[in-house]
Amino acid sequence: MSTENGTYQPEDDLDDTFEQDLRDMLRDGPSLSDAAATIQSGTSANRSGSSNNGSGAAVRTAAPSSVPPVAQPVATMPTAQTTSIGKPMTGIGGTAVANTPVPGQTTDQVSTSVIAKAKLDSLKSWSISTYKCTRQLVQEKLGKASRTVDLQLEAQIEVLRDTQRKYGNIMKLARALTNHFYQVVQTQRSLGDAFGELAQKSTELSEEFSYNAETQKSLCTNGETLLGALTFFTSSVSTLCNKTMEDTLLTVKQYESARIEYDAYRADLESLQLAPKDATTQARLHDARVKYEGQKERFDKLRQDVAVKLRFLEENKVKVMHKQLLLFHNAISAYFSGNQQALDATLKQFNIRPKAGNEVKPSFLEQ
Picture (tube, rainbow, N blue to C red):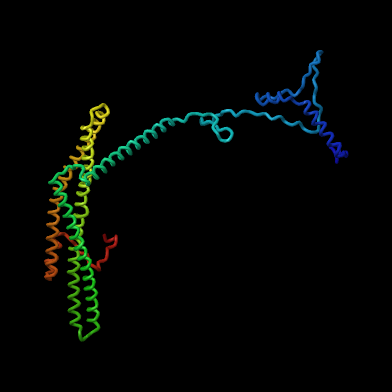
């Protein structure tokens, strides 16, 4: 093997030279205590060794070696630095070096706690109210609790429910009549077209086919007019039954729910009034009286709302049905008596425009 100057040197001699250089380096290097001090302080230790022989200091320098000395590890602690935007830099592993408090962190925690507490309070109040109302309803079914009854209002509510059922039946029958009559009109139109086609092809029966074709077309025209009246009648009854009456019945349901809550809190107040008068009972009695007054106020307000809506509904029902029943009677009578002028006048009186079966929707340029 050749060395740096180009001369050959055996591998055994190279091994001996490496071991000798390693022993010299370890002997001349710093001690373990100096290395520990270097790691802790972050400063490099003195590479020269001093020996005191009593007469002077002899400095011993390590002999040059072909193997470079091993660098001593110097550990430095990460220091907190700040970027140009004022945010702390992260140290080793991505963790923040300085625990700077984030503005608004405490406020967010407080807000979250307040919201959670409000939700828990709301859930608790709802659970207690639901339990009391369920208990009151079950006891009423079993006959073990009394209920507040307004006989006049209860009778009006029952009449309204019966009226809605009957009007719903009328609407169902009128819709069925409209659908069946629509099929009749379509059949008459098809029959009139067939008669007209045969009138052109059959010379012997051309006149008879023409008469029947004109009759069917006339009936089809009047039928479309009657269909307009029937559709308007069904739509008006449906609005009265499914929207106006349903809105009033929705208020009635709220009134009945408030009545159950009122009776439940009234029963609690009455039971606490019969309990022994100690400090705990007095506090619960005061709380029950406050809740009872609130439920009583809500119950009275809903009862007045139901009475007002029932009165307005009755007036509206009379006006609407008076108009619709007059329309239905005049349109049916005029159609089956063959009085086309009376049928057209009826629809014109109620501002109804019949839609022809072959009517083409105008384009957006014509509108």
